[in-house]
Length: 264
Image (cartoon, rainbow, N blue to C red; front, side, top):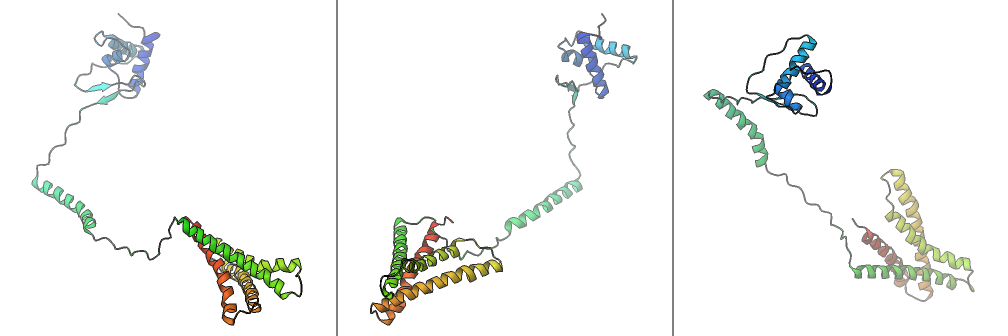
């Protein structure tokens, strides 16, 4: 019984068979029948193959024999050949075996040298780590020191304007006298907090500009407090060293708050 390869399933099978011929892996009749859910023993696949070759005017190939089995995916129709691979022959020559063992030993030598090499000692770091978590009492005492230092400095500078004036000083004089300790604190913060680039002109601005402002502010504030203590009758050492303790407490406490506020 002849099959029709011009329409329907016969045409699809014929097209699939021609496609397998073009890829160099021609399907067998059994493979073609299984691909289209036909019985492998019905001869349907072989009839399709014969009809394709008769229509194309080519010779019908002989039946394939052998034990190799091919699996054809239904999605693509491309035949995949699965042929058992013979095992590699064992090397029986003593000379070849000896050479292979020598190659293995040579390949292991660098790893052995690396594994037995003494580790390079790393010098310990001399930098002391900064604690990342401060106690509550440290925060309290540092803030008290800072507030006390800046309050006493401002009060002493303002009091100096009243003592040196013939009467009640103008408001501008009082405000100006309070500016110096505030400038000292702010310029100290600018010097410490700003991440200055490591270039010569930035260093000049940092220490020649901001540093000069801090130095002048500190000197003026020191002279005001020293003059005030001398006016109140304090001796030379108290009037000389006392202002350093007041402004110094403010600056040191501000630096400590800066360090405590850093996480790294």
